[in-house]
Image (tube, rainbow, N blue to C red):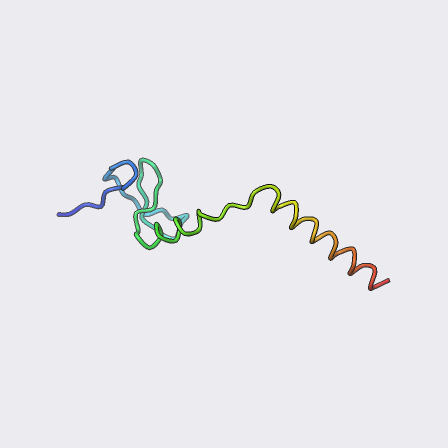
Length: 73
C-alpha cells in the first residue's frame, strides 16, 4: 500500500480537512497534499502586494470616489 507523504515535512499522517472542502492536508504541518492545490498555491504565492502598491490602490479609490461625488453634486 502506497501512502501519501508530505513534501514539506515527510509526514504520512494525512487527513481530509472539512474547512477546506475535504482537501487532503498533512496533519503535522498543514500543507495541502493534492498536487493541483500545490500548483495553484505556488503560482499564487508569487504575487505579494507591497505597501506602496496598497497605498497607490487606496489613493486611486479615494480619488475616484471624490470625483464621483463631485459629478453627482
